Length: 243
Image (cartoon, rainbow, N blue to C red):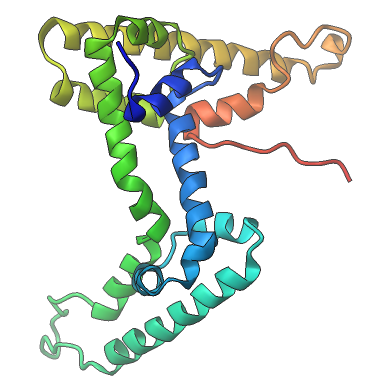
C-alpha cells in the first residue's frame, strides 16, 4: 500500500522499538502541541482568547513550564487570570438558590461546578484531540487494508493498559466479522505476552537488590521500572540525574 501523509506517524510508531506505539504517537502530538503553544502563537489574539477561556490541565501546565519560554507562559497566565477573575467575581456575587430552611439545595453550586470544569479543561488537550482520534482510526484502516502493517502490529511489543483498552473498545466500531476477531486476538496476544515480559523483567530488577544476586547479571531489567510504569500507567519517566 502506498503511504500517504496521515499513515506516516502511525507506521513510524509501529516501526519503533517501544512498549506502546499509541503512547509514542500521543507523546509526539503532545510535544507538537506544547511547542505550538509556547512558540509565536501565544501572541496571536485568537489563541490567547481560547487559552484565557479554557486554560491548561494539571498534566500539561508543567510541560509548558518545562519548555523554558517563561515570558510566553507568564503572559498567557496573566490574561488567563484576568479573565478568570471576572468570571469568579460574577459567580461569587450570584445569589444561591434557596431550598427552604431544613432542606438541602437541589441545585448545584455554580461556582464549584465552574472551577471543577476549569481544572480539567485544557487548550493543549483540545488541540491534540482531533489528530489523536484520526491516528486511532488510521490504525484500524491500516490493519484492515495493509498486510505490511498487520505484520508490524503482530510483531510489536504490545501496549500500555490504557491504550490496550482503547483499541479493544474501538475495534467493534471500525472492524467487523473475521477481521475484527483477528484484530482482537492479535491485540490481546501481544498485550498479555509483553505485559508478562515486562513483569518478569521487573521481578528480576527487584531480586537484584538481594545481596545474594549482587554478582548476577542484570539481564534485561535495568530499565524495567521505567517500562513497568509505562505499561501500567502510560507514563514516560526520565531517569533522575546524579548530582
